[in-house]
Image 1 (spheres, one colour):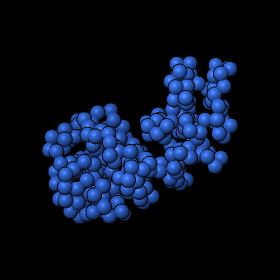
Image 2: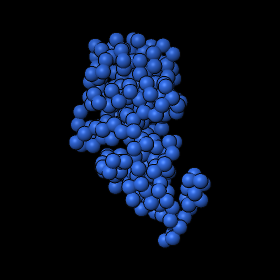
Image 3: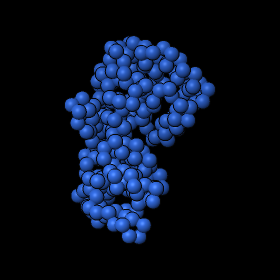
Image 4: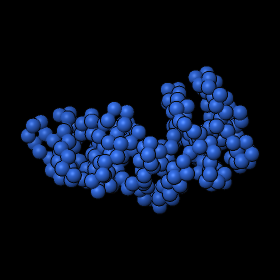
Length: 249
């Protein structure tokens, strides 16, 4: 059984999430919940759970403030929740941490719990926590953070501008970087698309997401394809060709 704690300043949100967990995620037991994040911090320091559902936007302390209060050596897993797809969410996405947008959908909640169950340990690697706070500070300054590329061997943080191509590889993604390196990352291409498209990336074909600033040329023959800075040739779907050309122009 997974012991979970919820910190959210809205009682309705807490009650709704509790109900969904009781009815759709029977492996989870909510052992405590807090509308006051300061009370939540006190509880977490004395009684660390397996899993914390943490709201980002709260008036007294933000979710990030809560983590600062607990300390960087966090011994439990975290799923962020928020009603707003704005400040903080990009920092969380780039840092490879889980999040749920309110109203929380049943399938997304179940997927998040399944992901937690598949992990070997509850403790979040210190590199991801440090990466999160770095990205939060970057976002506050209106800058782009760094993306955590996580694999079995390591966690590497890279500037999104250094990514040339992301290529589908079953449930993994091949990430080709500017310095000629290739990383195989345990995220789907759809996850990279969701993260990167707001920052001058485009999906010209089902199998690829490309950095528009790293396109060398567009070849009209053979149905049309792109040549990237690293000389990779990327096919362009007929139904995405016009949008791509508009973006490139």
